[in-house]
Length: 68
Image 1 (cartoon, rainbow, N blue to C red):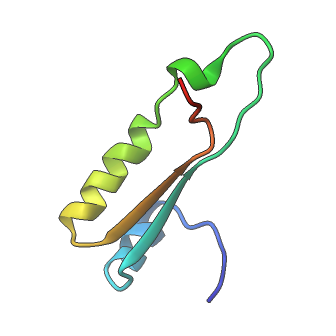
Image 2 (image 1 turned 60 degrees about the vertical axis):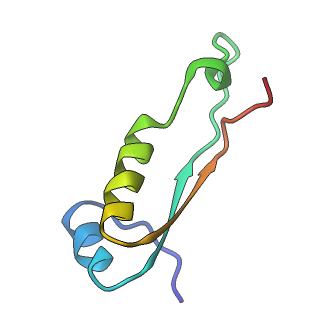
């Protein structure tokens, strides 16, 4: 198993053969804004929904999520 970043058309091509996808919303630090209180990974959620429709197993790690 290789760990690599795959994007665009290559991602779509590989999704045809693989069954598992891990989506990661990376941590961000900005002392001016409280990102974690208002930022939601909507793009990743939409991508995850598309993958679920393609019968893939999807997991999302949201590194910005905080307990509210």
